[in-house]
Length: 131
Image (tube, rainbow, N blue to C red; front, top):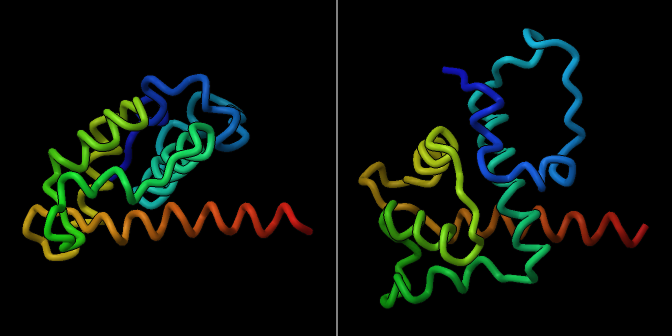
């Protein structure tokens, strides 16, 4: 399964250079990416946006998870990202994130695992800046 790079950056053109060096060598050399790359880039877009806005990702989900189970529905997950980050993910990115974080394979998203990944990336960046 592969997706076009054009679909990855829908609505986030202003973040493209912050996410990674975007060098296009030819129209065919970067016409598709593997699933892991697209998922990682979607996570990176979210991480960059949370850093830029000074937000804590975990707090987004607390209103939807009153019992603190660590899970929300896919629509709640999407709404949290749309509302708090004002970040419109492509349908491909959404689908891949849903698949990655649907740990129980029941349509619920483990936002704690998602937040751990986003926060782990942030702390790695902070540690690398201190060297």
